[in-house]
Image 1 (cartoon, rainbow, N blue to C red):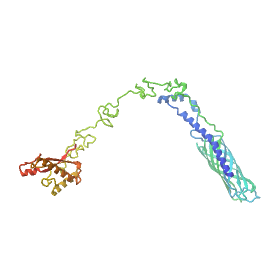
Image 2: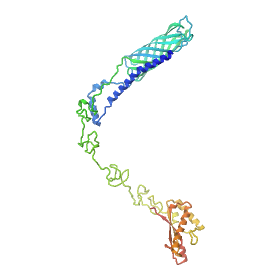
Image 3: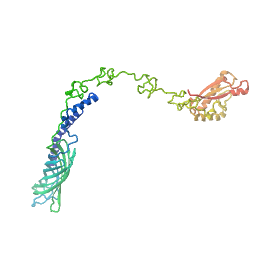
Image 4: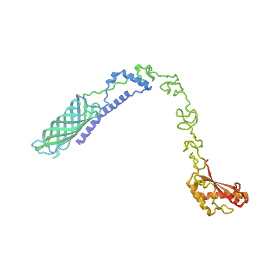
Length: 485
Protein backbone atom coordinates (compact mmCIF):
# COMPACT_ATOMS: atom_id res chain seq x y z
CA UNK A 1 0.00 0.00 0.00
CA UNK A 2 2.85 2.39 0.84
CA UNK A 3 4.46 1.81 -2.57
CA UNK A 4 1.23 2.64 -4.46
CA UNK A 5 0.58 5.73 -2.34
CA UNK A 6 4.12 7.00 -2.88
CA UNK A 7 3.83 6.58 -6.67
CA UNK A 8 0.54 8.46 -6.84
CA UNK A 9 1.90 11.32 -4.74
CA UNK A 10 4.97 11.68 -6.99
CA UNK A 11 2.88 11.72 -10.21
CA UNK A 12 0.41 14.23 -8.79
CA UNK A 13 3.25 16.53 -7.76
CA UNK A 14 4.74 16.41 -11.30
CA UNK A 15 1.42 17.33 -12.95
CA UNK A 16 0.57 20.07 -10.42
CA UNK A 17 3.93 21.80 -10.76
CA UNK A 18 4.38 21.40 -14.54
CA UNK A 19 0.87 22.37 -15.75
CA UNK A 20 0.92 26.13 -14.93
CA UNK A 21 4.44 26.42 -16.34
CA UNK A 22 3.40 24.83 -19.64
CA UNK A 23 0.35 27.11 -19.84
CA UNK A 24 2.52 30.17 -19.27
CA UNK A 25 4.89 29.02 -22.04
CA UNK A 26 1.97 28.79 -24.47
CA UNK A 27 0.98 32.40 -23.66
CA UNK A 28 4.59 33.52 -24.14
CA UNK A 29 4.78 31.78 -27.52
CA UNK A 30 1.64 33.58 -28.71
CA UNK A 31 3.05 36.91 -27.59
CA UNK A 32 6.25 36.24 -29.53
CA UNK A 33 4.33 35.35 -32.70
CA UNK A 34 2.16 38.46 -32.35
CA UNK A 35 5.25 40.62 -32.09
CA UNK A 36 6.97 39.16 -35.15
CA UNK A 37 3.98 38.96 -37.52
CA UNK A 38 2.33 42.40 -37.56
CA UNK A 39 0.12 42.60 -40.72
CA UNK A 40 1.17 44.79 -43.67
CA UNK A 41 -1.54 46.76 -45.43
CA UNK A 42 0.39 48.07 -48.42
CA UNK A 43 2.96 45.54 -49.67
CA UNK A 44 6.50 46.83 -50.01
CA UNK A 45 5.60 50.34 -48.79
CA UNK A 46 4.29 48.94 -45.50
CA UNK A 47 7.35 46.76 -45.15
CA UNK A 48 9.51 49.86 -45.52
CA UNK A 49 7.49 51.63 -42.85
CA UNK A 50 7.79 48.63 -40.51
CA UNK A 51 11.55 48.62 -41.03
CA UNK A 52 11.65 52.33 -40.21
CA UNK A 53 9.65 51.75 -37.03
CA UNK A 54 11.93 48.91 -35.97
CA UNK A 55 14.99 51.10 -36.50
CA UNK A 56 13.44 53.78 -34.28
CA UNK A 57 13.27 51.46 -31.25
CA UNK A 58 16.55 49.49 -31.16
CA UNK A 59 16.59 49.46 -27.37
CA UNK A 60 13.28 47.55 -27.22
CA UNK A 61 14.48 44.87 -29.66
CA UNK A 62 17.86 44.43 -27.94
CA UNK A 63 16.34 44.11 -24.47
CA UNK A 64 14.30 41.02 -25.38
CA UNK A 65 16.22 37.78 -25.77
CA UNK A 66 13.66 34.94 -25.64
CA UNK A 67 14.74 31.33 -25.16
CA UNK A 68 13.92 30.44 -28.76
CA UNK A 69 16.61 27.73 -28.76
CA UNK A 70 15.43 26.01 -25.57
CA UNK A 71 16.72 26.44 -22.01
CA UNK A 72 20.45 25.60 -21.88
CA UNK A 73 22.16 25.78 -18.47
CA UNK A 74 23.93 29.03 -17.51
CA UNK A 75 26.85 29.69 -15.17
CA UNK A 76 26.26 30.22 -11.44
CA UNK A 77 22.86 28.56 -11.12
CA UNK A 78 21.19 27.10 -8.03
CA UNK A 79 18.93 24.09 -8.46
CA UNK A 80 16.44 22.77 -5.91
CA UNK A 81 14.82 19.42 -6.56
CA UNK A 82 12.58 16.71 -5.19
CA UNK A 83 12.57 13.15 -6.39
CA UNK A 84 11.03 9.78 -5.92
CA UNK A 85 12.04 6.37 -7.04
CA UNK A 86 12.88 2.81 -6.07
CA UNK A 87 15.88 1.53 -4.11
CA UNK A 88 17.02 -2.03 -4.80
CA UNK A 89 19.06 -3.05 -1.70
CA UNK A 90 21.77 -5.59 -2.37
CA UNK A 91 21.25 -9.11 -1.06
CA UNK A 92 24.92 -8.99 0.01
CA UNK A 93 24.51 -5.85 2.16
CA UNK A 94 26.11 -5.29 5.52
CA UNK A 95 23.49 -2.87 6.86
CA UNK A 96 22.79 -4.48 10.24
CA UNK A 97 23.87 -4.40 13.84
CA UNK A 98 26.50 -7.05 14.54
CA UNK A 99 24.26 -8.61 17.21
CA UNK A 100 21.52 -9.43 14.67
CA UNK A 101 21.27 -12.15 12.10
CA UNK A 102 21.50 -10.84 8.50
CA UNK A 103 18.40 -10.95 6.29
CA UNK A 104 17.42 -9.27 3.01
CA UNK A 105 15.62 -5.95 2.60
CA UNK A 106 12.66 -5.67 0.21
CA UNK A 107 12.91 -3.30 -2.78
CA UNK A 108 11.82 0.04 -1.36
CA UNK A 109 10.02 3.17 -2.63
CA UNK A 110 11.97 6.29 -1.73
CA UNK A 111 11.50 10.06 -1.49
CA UNK A 112 14.20 12.68 -1.31
CA UNK A 113 15.41 16.19 -2.01
CA UNK A 114 18.55 17.71 -3.48
CA UNK A 115 20.26 21.10 -3.64
CA UNK A 116 22.81 21.89 -6.32
CA UNK A 117 25.15 24.73 -7.18
CA UNK A 118 26.50 25.03 -10.73
CA UNK A 119 29.37 27.53 -10.89
CA UNK A 120 29.80 26.59 -14.56
CA UNK A 121 27.21 25.54 -17.11
CA UNK A 122 28.85 22.12 -17.33
CA UNK A 123 29.98 21.54 -13.74
CA UNK A 124 28.01 21.36 -10.51
CA UNK A 125 28.03 20.24 -6.86
CA UNK A 126 24.99 18.58 -5.29
CA UNK A 127 23.86 17.42 -1.88
CA UNK A 128 21.08 14.85 -1.57
CA UNK A 129 19.10 13.24 1.24
CA UNK A 130 16.58 10.45 0.92
CA UNK A 131 14.51 7.99 2.96
CA UNK A 132 13.09 4.65 1.81
CA UNK A 133 10.51 2.63 3.69
CA UNK A 134 11.26 -1.08 3.48
CA UNK A 135 10.72 -4.44 5.15
CA UNK A 136 12.95 -7.25 6.28
CA UNK A 137 12.23 -10.51 4.52
CA UNK A 138 12.37 -12.57 7.72
CA UNK A 139 9.37 -11.77 9.89
CA UNK A 140 8.22 -9.07 7.48
CA UNK A 141 9.22 -6.41 10.02
CA UNK A 142 9.44 -2.77 8.99
CA UNK A 143 12.71 -0.98 8.32
CA UNK A 144 13.78 2.47 7.21
CA UNK A 145 16.68 2.98 4.78
CA UNK A 146 18.21 6.45 4.52
CA UNK A 147 21.16 8.18 2.97
CA UNK A 148 22.92 11.51 2.61
CA UNK A 149 25.58 12.21 0.01
CA UNK A 150 27.54 14.86 -1.82
CA UNK A 151 28.11 14.56 -5.56
CA UNK A 152 30.02 16.06 -8.45
CA UNK A 153 27.97 16.53 -11.66
CA UNK A 154 29.36 16.84 -15.18
CA UNK A 155 26.72 17.78 -17.75
CA UNK A 156 26.43 18.71 -21.42
CA UNK A 157 24.77 22.18 -21.59
CA UNK A 158 22.36 21.42 -24.43
CA UNK A 159 19.16 23.35 -25.14
CA UNK A 160 16.35 20.93 -24.29
CA UNK A 161 17.89 17.67 -23.01
CA UNK A 162 20.92 17.90 -20.70
CA UNK A 163 22.67 14.53 -20.24
CA UNK A 164 24.98 14.18 -17.24
CA UNK A 165 27.18 11.85 -15.22
CA UNK A 166 27.22 12.02 -11.45
CA UNK A 167 29.41 10.57 -8.74
CA UNK A 168 30.15 11.13 -5.08
CA UNK A 169 30.30 9.73 -1.55
CA UNK A 170 28.01 9.66 1.47
CA UNK A 171 26.39 7.30 3.95
CA UNK A 172 23.71 4.64 3.46
CA UNK A 173 22.02 3.44 6.60
CA UNK A 174 19.19 1.30 7.91
CA UNK A 175 17.17 1.16 11.12
CA UNK A 176 14.52 -1.26 12.26
CA UNK A 177 13.68 -3.96 14.80
CA UNK A 178 14.60 -6.78 12.42
CA UNK A 179 18.34 -6.02 12.04
CA UNK A 180 18.97 -3.04 14.30
CA UNK A 181 20.64 0.14 13.03
CA UNK A 182 23.81 0.68 11.00
CA UNK A 183 25.37 3.09 8.50
CA UNK A 184 28.05 2.38 5.92
CA UNK A 185 30.12 4.57 3.66
CA UNK A 186 28.49 4.58 0.18
CA UNK A 187 30.22 5.59 -3.02
CA UNK A 188 27.68 6.34 -5.72
CA UNK A 189 27.88 6.95 -9.44
CA UNK A 190 25.35 7.09 -12.23
CA UNK A 191 23.93 8.57 -15.45
CA UNK A 192 20.93 10.71 -16.13
CA UNK A 193 19.32 13.51 -18.08
CA UNK A 194 17.36 16.69 -17.43
CA UNK A 195 14.45 17.58 -19.72
CA UNK A 196 13.66 21.32 -19.78
CA UNK A 197 9.95 22.07 -19.37
CA UNK A 198 10.16 25.84 -18.87
CA UNK A 199 12.87 28.41 -18.17
CA UNK A 200 12.74 27.44 -14.47
CA UNK A 201 11.55 23.83 -14.33
CA UNK A 202 13.04 20.55 -15.57
CA UNK A 203 12.15 16.87 -15.37
CA UNK A 204 15.12 14.78 -14.18
CA UNK A 205 15.80 11.05 -14.59
CA UNK A 206 18.67 9.29 -12.74
CA UNK A 207 20.07 5.77 -12.55
CA UNK A 208 22.49 5.21 -9.63
CA UNK A 209 24.63 2.48 -8.10
CA UNK A 210 25.59 2.80 -4.42
CA UNK A 211 28.66 0.78 -3.43
CA UNK A 212 28.72 -0.25 0.24
CA UNK A 213 30.63 -2.77 2.27
CA UNK A 214 29.85 -6.35 1.36
CA UNK A 215 28.83 -8.72 4.14
CA UNK A 216 31.78 -10.90 5.04
CA UNK A 217 34.25 -8.56 3.31
CA UNK A 218 35.99 -9.09 -0.02
CA UNK A 219 34.27 -6.63 -2.36
CA UNK A 220 31.40 -4.21 -2.69
CA UNK A 221 27.65 -4.58 -2.45
CA UNK A 222 25.66 -2.90 -5.27
CA UNK A 223 22.52 -1.00 -4.23
CA UNK A 224 20.78 0.35 -7.32
CA UNK A 225 18.40 3.29 -7.57
CA UNK A 226 16.00 4.49 -10.27
CA UNK A 227 14.97 8.12 -9.66
CA UNK A 228 12.47 10.52 -11.26
CA UNK A 229 12.19 14.09 -10.04
CA UNK A 230 11.52 17.77 -10.66
CA UNK A 231 14.23 20.42 -10.53
CA UNK A 232 13.62 24.14 -10.08
CA UNK A 233 16.26 26.62 -11.30
CA UNK A 234 16.59 29.37 -8.68
CA UNK A 235 18.93 31.93 -10.25
CA UNK A 236 17.71 32.10 -13.86
CA UNK A 237 15.43 35.13 -14.37
CA UNK A 238 12.55 34.80 -16.78
CA UNK A 239 12.90 37.10 -19.79
CA UNK A 240 9.67 38.72 -20.90
CA UNK A 241 9.08 40.28 -24.33
CA UNK A 242 8.42 44.01 -24.42
CA UNK A 243 4.94 45.11 -25.46
CA UNK A 244 4.65 45.56 -29.23
CA UNK A 245 4.68 49.16 -30.50
CA UNK A 246 1.18 50.55 -31.07
CA UNK A 247 -0.24 50.36 -34.64
CA UNK A 248 -3.99 50.79 -34.26
CA UNK A 249 -4.88 50.44 -37.95
CA UNK A 250 -2.35 47.63 -38.60
CA UNK A 251 -0.91 49.34 -41.68
CA UNK A 252 2.72 48.93 -40.66
CA UNK A 253 3.10 52.63 -39.74
CA UNK A 254 3.35 53.06 -35.98
CA UNK A 255 0.80 55.34 -34.32
CA UNK A 256 3.45 57.80 -33.18
CA UNK A 257 4.25 58.68 -36.84
CA UNK A 258 0.87 57.78 -38.46
CA UNK A 259 -1.12 60.81 -39.69
CA UNK A 260 -4.21 58.55 -40.05
CA UNK A 261 -3.89 56.13 -37.09
CA UNK A 262 -7.46 54.86 -37.39
CA UNK A 263 -7.34 54.21 -41.16
CA UNK A 264 -4.90 51.86 -42.87
CA UNK A 265 -2.59 53.68 -45.26
CA UNK A 266 0.91 53.77 -46.72
CA UNK A 267 4.26 55.16 -45.62
CA UNK A 268 5.37 57.71 -44.80
CA UNK A 269 2.13 59.41 -43.74
CA UNK A 270 0.13 56.27 -43.00
CA UNK A 271 -2.89 57.56 -44.95
CA UNK A 272 -4.59 55.78 -47.91
CA UNK A 273 -3.31 56.69 -51.39
CA UNK A 274 -4.93 56.86 -54.87
CA UNK A 275 -2.09 57.61 -57.29
CA UNK A 276 -4.16 57.53 -60.53
CA UNK A 277 -7.17 59.41 -59.05
CA UNK A 278 -9.64 56.82 -60.33
CA UNK A 279 -11.49 56.51 -57.05
CA UNK A 280 -9.95 53.10 -56.25
CA UNK A 281 -7.41 53.33 -53.44
CA UNK A 282 -3.96 52.01 -54.27
CA UNK A 283 -4.29 49.20 -51.74
CA UNK A 284 -7.24 47.81 -53.76
CA UNK A 285 -6.14 49.02 -57.23
CA UNK A 286 -4.65 46.36 -59.53
CA UNK A 287 -3.39 49.19 -61.80
CA UNK A 288 -2.46 51.99 -59.39
CA UNK A 289 -0.79 54.08 -62.14
CA UNK A 290 -3.57 53.69 -64.77
CA UNK A 291 -7.09 54.97 -64.18
CA UNK A 292 -9.88 52.44 -64.45
CA UNK A 293 -13.32 51.57 -63.05
CA UNK A 294 -13.97 49.83 -59.73
CA UNK A 295 -13.51 47.32 -58.34
CA UNK A 296 -10.05 46.57 -59.80
CA UNK A 297 -9.20 50.06 -61.04
CA UNK A 298 -7.71 48.91 -64.37
CA UNK A 299 -8.60 50.26 -67.84
CA UNK A 300 -10.90 48.05 -69.88
CA UNK A 301 -9.02 46.37 -72.73
CA UNK A 302 -10.44 44.03 -75.36
CA UNK A 303 -8.17 41.03 -74.83
CA UNK A 304 -9.76 38.93 -77.61
CA UNK A 305 -10.32 41.13 -80.67
CA UNK A 306 -10.95 38.19 -83.07
CA UNK A 307 -13.29 36.45 -80.59
CA UNK A 308 -11.64 33.06 -81.01
CA UNK A 309 -11.35 32.39 -77.27
CA UNK A 310 -7.57 32.93 -77.17
CA UNK A 311 -6.83 36.21 -75.34
CA UNK A 312 -3.93 38.56 -75.79
CA UNK A 313 -0.97 38.25 -75.40
CA UNK A 314 -1.30 34.51 -76.06
CA UNK A 315 -3.02 35.11 -79.44
CA UNK A 316 -0.28 35.29 -82.09
CA UNK A 317 -2.88 36.02 -84.82
CA UNK A 318 -5.14 38.58 -83.09
CA UNK A 319 -6.94 39.54 -86.32
CA UNK A 320 -7.69 36.00 -87.51
CA UNK A 321 -10.00 33.50 -85.88
CA UNK A 322 -7.81 30.61 -84.78
CA UNK A 323 -7.47 27.80 -82.30
CA UNK A 324 -5.61 27.22 -79.07
CA UNK A 325 -2.89 27.53 -77.99
CA UNK A 326 -1.52 30.30 -80.27
CA UNK A 327 -4.83 31.60 -81.64
CA UNK A 328 -3.80 31.15 -85.29
CA UNK A 329 -5.90 29.26 -87.89
CA UNK A 330 -4.67 25.86 -89.01
CA UNK A 331 -3.19 26.27 -92.51
CA UNK A 332 -3.41 24.07 -95.62
CA UNK A 333 0.02 24.77 -97.07
CA UNK A 334 -0.25 22.48 -100.11
CA UNK A 335 -3.91 23.32 -100.82
CA UNK A 336 -5.06 19.70 -100.98
CA UNK A 337 -7.98 20.23 -98.61
CA UNK A 338 -6.27 18.45 -95.71
CA UNK A 339 -5.23 20.82 -92.90
CA UNK A 340 -1.59 20.79 -91.88
CA UNK A 341 -2.26 19.32 -88.44
CA UNK A 342 -3.57 16.14 -90.09
CA UNK A 343 -1.51 16.25 -93.30
CA UNK A 344 1.44 13.83 -93.25
CA UNK A 345 2.92 15.66 -96.24
CA UNK A 346 1.93 19.32 -95.62
CA UNK A 347 4.09 20.61 -98.50
CA UNK A 348 2.93 18.06 -101.14
CA UNK A 349 -0.69 17.78 -102.27
CA UNK A 350 -2.65 14.56 -101.89
CA UNK A 351 -3.30 12.50 -105.02
CA UNK A 352 -7.07 12.00 -105.09
CA UNK A 353 -7.25 8.48 -106.50
CA UNK A 354 -9.21 6.62 -103.84
CA UNK A 355 -6.09 5.13 -102.25
CA UNK A 356 -5.19 6.57 -98.82
CA UNK A 357 -6.73 9.91 -99.79
CA UNK A 358 -6.82 11.13 -96.16
CA UNK A 359 -3.09 11.06 -95.34
CA UNK A 360 -2.28 14.15 -97.42
CA UNK A 361 0.55 12.52 -99.40
CA UNK A 362 0.94 11.92 -103.17
CA UNK A 363 0.61 8.27 -104.18
CA UNK A 364 -0.44 5.92 -106.98
CA UNK A 365 -2.81 2.99 -107.02
CA UNK A 366 -1.00 -0.29 -106.28
CA UNK A 367 -0.82 -2.65 -109.25
CA UNK A 368 -2.92 -5.17 -107.33
CA UNK A 369 -5.71 -2.60 -107.09
CA UNK A 370 -5.39 -1.48 -110.72
CA UNK A 371 -6.16 -5.05 -111.78
CA UNK A 372 -9.63 -4.62 -110.31
CA UNK A 373 -10.57 -1.31 -111.87
CA UNK A 374 -12.72 -1.00 -114.98
CA UNK A 375 -14.27 -4.10 -116.57
CA UNK A 376 -13.57 -7.19 -114.44
CA UNK A 377 -13.24 -10.29 -116.57
CA UNK A 378 -14.21 -13.66 -115.16
CA UNK A 379 -17.55 -12.92 -113.47
CA UNK A 380 -20.41 -14.97 -114.96
CA UNK A 381 -24.20 -15.13 -114.29
CA UNK A 382 -27.01 -17.46 -115.27
CA UNK A 383 -28.78 -16.19 -118.38
CA UNK A 384 -31.36 -13.53 -117.53
CA UNK A 385 -30.65 -13.91 -113.79
CA UNK A 386 -28.44 -12.41 -111.06
CA UNK A 387 -27.15 -15.82 -109.90
CA UNK A 388 -23.33 -15.94 -109.92
CA UNK A 389 -21.85 -19.06 -111.49
CA UNK A 390 -19.23 -21.16 -109.69
CA UNK A 391 -16.48 -20.40 -112.22
CA UNK A 392 -16.56 -16.77 -110.99
CA UNK A 393 -15.10 -17.79 -107.60
CA UNK A 394 -11.44 -17.44 -108.63
CA UNK A 395 -11.84 -13.87 -109.84
CA UNK A 396 -13.99 -12.74 -106.94
CA UNK A 397 -11.74 -14.48 -104.41
CA UNK A 398 -8.74 -12.56 -105.76
CA UNK A 399 -10.74 -9.34 -105.40
CA UNK A 400 -11.48 -10.17 -101.75
CA UNK A 401 -7.74 -10.59 -101.00
CA UNK A 402 -6.94 -7.20 -102.55
CA UNK A 403 -9.73 -5.41 -100.69
CA UNK A 404 -8.68 -6.94 -97.37
CA UNK A 405 -5.02 -6.03 -97.99
CA UNK A 406 -5.89 -2.39 -98.75
CA UNK A 407 -8.62 -1.38 -96.27
CA UNK A 408 -8.61 2.28 -97.41
CA UNK A 409 -10.01 1.27 -100.86
CA UNK A 410 -13.74 1.82 -101.42
CA UNK A 411 -15.48 0.48 -104.56
CA UNK A 412 -18.43 1.18 -106.78
CA UNK A 413 -19.70 -1.99 -108.48
CA UNK A 414 -21.80 -1.28 -111.54
CA UNK A 415 -23.82 -3.83 -113.56
CA UNK A 416 -24.37 -3.48 -117.38
CA UNK A 417 -26.51 -5.33 -119.98
CA UNK A 418 -26.90 -5.39 -123.74
CA UNK A 419 -29.80 -3.63 -125.46
CA UNK A 420 -31.82 -6.82 -125.94
CA UNK A 421 -35.09 -7.07 -124.11
CA UNK A 422 -37.18 -4.64 -122.11
CA UNK A 423 -35.15 -1.62 -120.86
CA UNK A 424 -36.86 -1.68 -117.44
CA UNK A 425 -36.02 -5.39 -117.06
CA UNK A 426 -32.41 -4.70 -118.06
CA UNK A 427 -32.11 -1.87 -115.51
CA UNK A 428 -33.31 -4.15 -112.70
CA UNK A 429 -31.18 -7.08 -113.83
CA UNK A 430 -28.02 -4.94 -113.91
CA UNK A 431 -28.71 -3.64 -110.39
CA UNK A 432 -29.40 -7.13 -109.05
CA UNK A 433 -26.16 -8.48 -110.54
CA UNK A 434 -24.12 -5.64 -108.97
CA UNK A 435 -25.82 -6.36 -105.62
CA UNK A 436 -25.04 -10.09 -105.96
CA UNK A 437 -21.35 -9.36 -106.46
CA UNK A 438 -21.34 -7.07 -103.39
CA UNK A 439 -23.08 -9.74 -101.31
CA UNK A 440 -20.48 -12.33 -102.38
CA UNK A 441 -17.64 -10.04 -101.26
CA UNK A 442 -19.31 -9.05 -97.97
CA UNK A 443 -19.91 -12.67 -96.99
CA UNK A 444 -16.14 -13.21 -97.22
CA UNK A 445 -15.10 -10.37 -94.94
CA UNK A 446 -15.23 -7.13 -96.94
CA UNK A 447 -17.07 -4.36 -95.07
CA UNK A 448 -20.43 -3.56 -96.64
CA UNK A 449 -19.87 0.16 -96.02
CA UNK A 450 -16.90 0.07 -98.41
CA UNK A 451 -19.00 -0.95 -101.45
CA UNK A 452 -21.64 0.94 -103.42
CA UNK A 453 -23.64 -0.61 -106.27
CA UNK A 454 -25.25 0.82 -109.37
CA UNK A 455 -27.39 -0.67 -112.17
CA UNK A 456 -26.63 1.01 -115.49
CA UNK A 457 -28.80 -1.30 -117.63
CA UNK A 458 -28.01 -0.87 -121.35
CA UNK A 459 -27.35 2.85 -121.11
CA UNK A 460 -23.52 2.70 -121.11
CA UNK A 461 -22.46 0.37 -123.94
CA UNK A 462 -18.77 -0.13 -124.72
CA UNK A 463 -19.37 -2.03 -128.00
CA UNK A 464 -21.87 -2.23 -130.87
CA UNK A 465 -25.15 -3.84 -129.73
CA UNK A 466 -25.87 -4.83 -133.40
CA UNK A 467 -23.35 -7.68 -133.29
CA UNK A 468 -23.26 -10.72 -131.06
CA UNK A 469 -19.65 -9.96 -130.01
CA UNK A 470 -20.60 -6.40 -129.11
CA UNK A 471 -23.58 -7.52 -127.08
CA UNK A 472 -21.35 -9.94 -125.17
CA UNK A 473 -18.91 -7.14 -124.24
CA UNK A 474 -21.76 -4.93 -123.08
CA UNK A 475 -22.92 -7.61 -120.61
CA UNK A 476 -20.29 -6.88 -117.91
CA UNK A 477 -19.41 -5.94 -114.29
CA UNK A 478 -17.19 -2.90 -113.65
CA UNK A 479 -15.21 -1.97 -110.50
CA UNK A 480 -14.42 1.70 -109.84
CA UNK A 481 -12.21 2.94 -106.97
CA UNK A 482 -14.05 5.75 -105.15
CA UNK A 483 -12.24 8.85 -103.96
CA UNK A 484 -12.62 9.99 -100.33
CA UNK A 485 -15.30 12.65 -99.87
